[in-house]
Image (tube, rainbow, N blue to C red):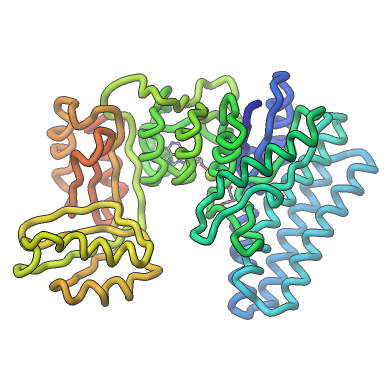
Length: 440
Ligand code: ADP
Ligand code: ASP
Ligand code: MG
């Protein structure tokens, strides 16, 4: 059995849903198809939630109506037969009625998650209606019946495995299953999600849970590129990556993959393929245990980084000092991405401000604490790059005009990371594209 996940752009227009149908019916192998919300929908739902949260109900109502109008015209183009059109209309009516009801009740965090879930619920139900019109046998597997996270927002892989196997066992005669990406239930049984871009994570978790032959991530680009195509003009697709390389790129900002989406596939040894829905014959990127080649493969950038510097002439040399500092971050479940030390100071970076105030307060007794926000981690990822000749000289030559704040080298064989002020991100990515790949 294989997994095919289609992102927002891949289902964002009726003709794209037709293309997806062609792709999923090409081969006989049974499959679970994981769908995102139509492109733009989750952003619109976030805005609706924000308007409701800030008490701007009239604005929220306008936003809901605008989104509903989009779906009305979408279904008109998607399904043509009277019966299936009536069905699609009823689906749209049901979900927008729900949003309109939410408008009238008092807002809560749990309700905001319910709002966000409407996108994937709509896309999967409408896609199934289209499949029905085409006479394609399929079954909708509700993600809320098997996808779950624990009290720390971590997926419960054991329970996902058991529930999903039960659902598949009960429907042995089916060969094509459709399910929602992104959405899940939390430890309180409420509707929740796997964070933005989480449909990739859903796909990888499902692939791991059923030990799929492959987890295909179909998107709007022909695989992982060597640099961020939103920032740099000339980029090229990479044919092969190891799980480690792909995980580093995803974690350090390559938007094509959710930051946590590689580990389930890696742990359960399911190959991942990144493919382009609009260009299905393109090779794409294969991600397995094998790296394929040695050397630098790609650069990614992660914004919103805060550097925290702790200076203390008295304490830094004492052993146990770093442990005490790390314990503060552990207490607030805030992970550290980069660290550099000298005899009198230590700098760490974090990507979340949720507990920043408390962390800074608890660090105060250790020395002088300073923070710098608006930084970006630029990661250079590849295979055995710390053993590859010239990487460092090329890197530093390329970066002469950039005020690099921190460098992390040697923590893994696959990664060299730099911290730069976010204002220099574009220039850094462009200079590295030229310096490391000869691309301008
Ligand atoms: P989907 O909706 O299919 O999940 P996303 O927008 O989440 O698609 O991810 C695909 C996008 O990721 C591409 O359109 C591209 O702009 C962006 N991207 C960022 N970095 C990379 C990279 N290194 N390689 C490929 N795409 C990247
Ligand atoms: N629809 C969700 C989002 O836009 C999940 C996803 O597309 O992966 O974040
Ligand atoms: Mg995505």
